[in-house]
Image 1 (cartoon, one colour):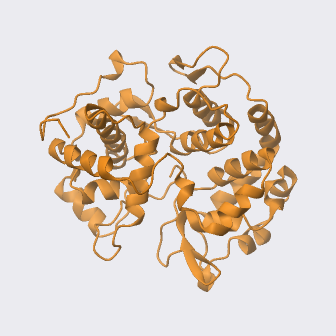
Image 2 (cartoon, one colour):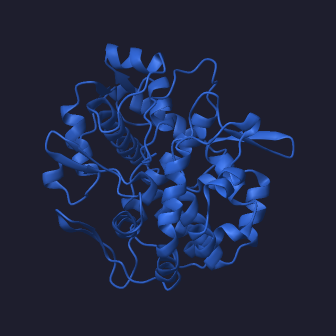
Length: 355
């Protein structure tokens, strides 16, 4: 890298920027008391990303089990849209002890991979009528884990899928017709990010999802500041882009999507000594104690994660490497999956439907 090690990269404050997520995230990072970013470590992590030639692209599904990839390739355009929408509607908070796992072909999978396997067992999942009539008994049988372990937040996931049922067909029609969505809108800020004329903005789609589909409105408040994280809404927009990209008709403004702030990427960033927690927070996380959703610590972890990815993007740009935030996020997420679970510092535990 040709940047001076340790030199701070400053991002614009929200009052200087139209971006509705990174702007307030930077404001939170500026005021953070429990979480800080180590600038020198940013440079070293950027160098690791630059040297990574094993995997590329923003498609996190590259890591999916082979059977899931085969299943996805068999789906029609409409079915793929339904699959991604249903997956992300209930795709969150997989951690717990004992760990929820499912087995396929002699291999055990957990987390998002396990949910992918459950959802890819039967195309009946992709019907709004199936979701409408999904009983608790049927749901439990479909997501039954090894040794009878129940998927975390089981009741909340079922409710969200039932609430999605009357909205799914309308949303699919919107996406299939690639209706023009040119702005990311928030009830407080109005139009904040515009796509090219007549094109569908990825960030605008994420805000549309957050406003119109149940459970996607992932926003927090920090000292009077509203901060939309929209982790699952942005990830759904990114995955839906794969449908359009296959037809050479991608969404626009993909580079406006931010990091998808969850619990795995902060774990990696802490392991790499990029995110530094205060003594009390570090002890809480190391002891695997839960932190409350919407708490100061949780918001600061997520906001600083978004800003780290933006700083990594700028550091890579200095080296003439153009990666958008979602591509960097995918690389970090894949790296986080490879951490030695016995040796790595724990991830923060926050029981929430947001991630």
